[in-house]
Amino acid sequence: MTLDTGSDNPKLTPWLRVFIGIVIVVLVIGSGLFFVPDLVRAGWPWAIPPFNARFLGAIYLAGLSGVSVLLFSNRWAPARVALPMGVTFTGVVSIASIIHIDTFDFVKTRTQLWFILYIIPCFVSAYFLWMYRRLPPVVPDPPPPPWRAVLMAEGVLLGLYGLGMFFLPDVFTSFWPWKIDAFHAQIYSGLFITAAVGVLTLYRAAAPSEFLVMGLTHVVLGPFAILGVVIVDAAQHRVDWLSAGTWLWMGGCALVFVIGVGMLREALAVGRLRAPALDAP
Image (cartoon, rainbow, N blue to C red):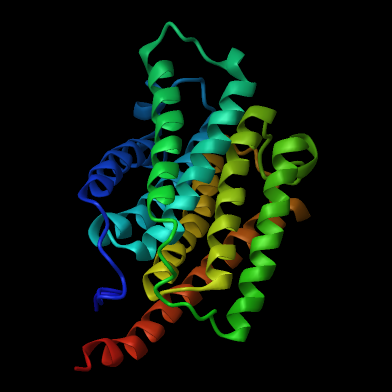
């Protein structure tokens, strides 16, 4: 079933699809940190340890799953959710990179590309969002009360945690299964702040394709984040599996997956309800 293809969900400029296509190429390369970490790490802008490489690869993979929906749709829903998330993630990562500018060697082309591929897309995403700012939500009604409670709770929790990671990285990553330095913590904070932006956008109004975007990112991120830790630790044996912090982290990732499954179910359920109305003469 194709979601949100009615006349109430306008198509956007083809240039957005071109831009998203370029973004997807970057996300595919970044996803290689999970599947072929040794190969991708060799060309990464900084020396990235194994645990961080797999986790960052999981983040890219989750982003790829969500952004792909916008590539095929190229409509206001799900762009209404995807574009603010894009601005947020690229913005936070750009700021974190500038703060830790001494981490980079600007003589290397890979470093120059890193800043180009984050700073420019941040402004491009913001431009498209500004271009379509007057378009109303495709589904103006808020989601059902149970979902509103879940979205508000998740959005507030993720947002506060992401801000905590950015401003107090040592404190807010102290329970992670592996040691996180300030630079990587602030990079990862972009994930949590971006997810908060996405779910709080759904809190106000949510079309099926918007639930689909958020659901896909959740169901991909949760399991792959856990799998990355398991794979790396199988070789390095550095995770304390008796630590409460480790299982808190694992449980959080599992909860992300469960919420994502619920979002996908909601996307399909609402899509079925909307289909007869859209098909009616």
